[in-house]
Length: 338
Image (tube, rainbow, N blue to C red; front, side, top):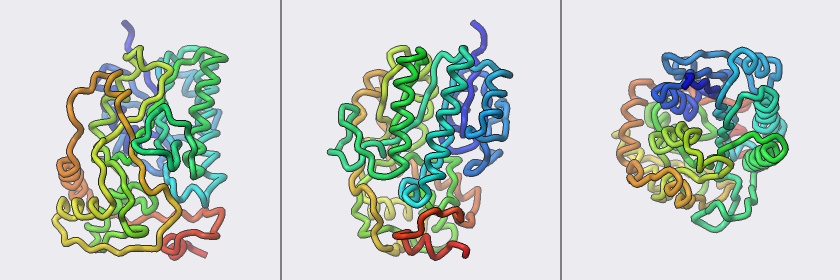
């Protein structure tokens, strides 16, 4: 059988880079497309072809499809800051919807793509009952979740019209090695660890009793990579992630222990966010035969902490292109440049 060729968008980012490694180990030829707005070229695994560019640029995307004739598309290129998405609506929809549609158009026109794998988010559920299951009617409460749901629906109608197979994953709170710890707007574990390296207190919005389940990357990337060789997964949607839930206060304690620093927390004014968000994973376990348990939080934090110490602290990023400043959290407003 010929070597399959896979496109990994956002493959210089956290999840994409780890999936690219799994694909290479599985015998795929891998092409990474990334504009490096959030990822690093150092994350691109050896053996992958790297092209710098944006999924929002049809000329770049169409040229790649013409050059490589992709068998599979793994789409991770998105700006995944739920809280910030309220204040960058145009940026959010341009990158997360129009960029995805550009890829979908190219996949249809190429006629070679056997499956399109899309990473959505449990943000599509909004404040639904927990644990959130795939049978629930999505009701997203932020522009990021709305964008992800729009792409899910686009993949379904594209399949109905053009026969493009897809697999949709809804991961949540994924953390681990190669994550960007310098992003002040997303990935709370990375934020905490960077603050630990910088000798700063952990910052928590509200009282810290928000509940989440945290997922080590090793529980996600291998499953996503082998989805294209799992026929039962085609044209299905799966929650994927950890089952054990923690408050942000409990996470702060565990992260401080992993980083071997005293626990110091500064509570910031609460922001508008879903208070309790975690998912049911019965469907993904059944489809992929996942019998082993998840990576325990303490073990995952220890592995990430060891990697983070080798990277050193990062200056937290500042997103200057804020479109709506009204109700912007004070801690985010304070770092904006006039």
